[in-house]
Image (cartoon, rainbow, N blue to C red):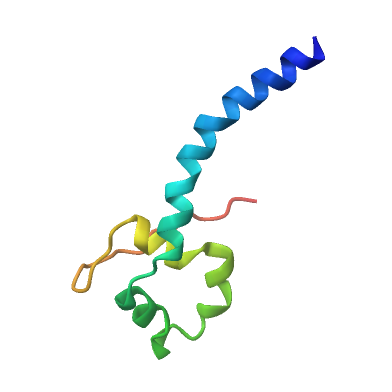
Length: 79
């Protein structure tokens, strides 16, 4: 039974890894305009959170281009 479970897990892991790979490749290819926007001096207060927020990956994924208007959205914290 254990051998069957391990084999079943390996079979399911293959397609999942194929889905994750393009995301990892996209994160590696950060366009120059995204890097320039992230290094803008006006963002100095936000730069400390960029790693946690994965801002470069978010900008690449959302296909934000130079000249695109972006509205920051956030939800209030309810405590």
